[in-house]
Image (tube, rainbow, N blue to C red; front, side):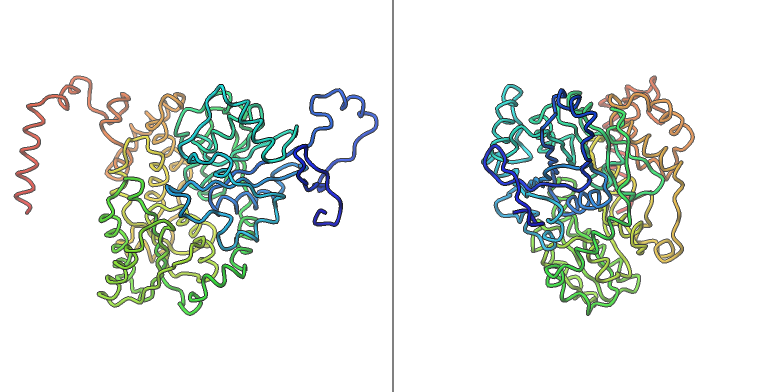
Length: 493
């Protein structure tokens, strides 16, 4: 029986499939004959929503509540666990608060189980096997001959790319996975996939800035209303499981909240450098007068990092609370109302600032801008945005003073220039605007967002002039430069 007590039809595979009647139009008898001649006549519509994080599921729930998706006979939430070792990492559907979001969907299925023993991030179907995989999934998931609609995150890579290729011809909606949507598409998407994307659903994390993602296919962005998203997050904060997981937090009055990201797993920092980054966050918060600090580590980060931070907190006389249960940072914002949120380039920094009006500060973005390799690394635009928009933790006046409102036009020009430098073959139309930006805006502040070698390779302003391009490849010149640097270091040391 359905939740409303009505009998539900069975799929061709024999599984009961809940029927959705909300928003279904009453057939017009004058067009019944015309409808019967259409290929989709009499076919049910199943919407498959693909997610790998609780944040993504919350975004989808908000989009559904805001009626950003049309009516469907069945709505399926397809969960993927993309952790390096999924067997030892909790899946999204086991996290505190998930049951509050579960009601929006008729079924919850596992992508990991469907393709076992392959890993979701490393497996993709062979082209010749696509019809076989679609037939298998239709049988396994009770889809029968249903008309399929897909909503996925990170369409540029697997597992989302694999899913859209298997269901050939299905219309696709993409929803943004944080700040990366403001940057370029990280890989060239097959036209048979890209041309099926109807829109990009995203949160208004940076007001006035339009996403660059998928614009090469003419995909238009569409906002998920902020108030609806905050209402969904409010459900998570009120959930009993969430409350049990954060029982210790109410006694911590307006602490500084530190956000860990596990950047060493991405080979951006070493483990020792990331531990030092967390210690810098702690010392910076203490220097601003915060004596009570809460650290939210990345769910897959080593436990020893927390122990190291606890030793540092004891050394400098700070009361530190380390969260052992994975919860969304946004839930903590509502439960704790932190006096300061500190992080590196987490999307949660922008939700704290834009959605909850909390003071925020960044740490380590200059190092990351230097370290990110290759230049087209998809984290570059998120790091650029956080660096350009948020104050450095070491700048007391900027952190504690009035918030600086960004110039949307200047920010758009910067992001478009960085995006072109990252993916010039995907966005060739951005070259003129990039040349104008680099000609007029390269200075001590903006140089950190670009690399001279990259500008030279693309023949952009700021690169090495053509007549001097031989210098970086000249062995004698490089030897002299290394000698000069060593002398300089010795003198400074």
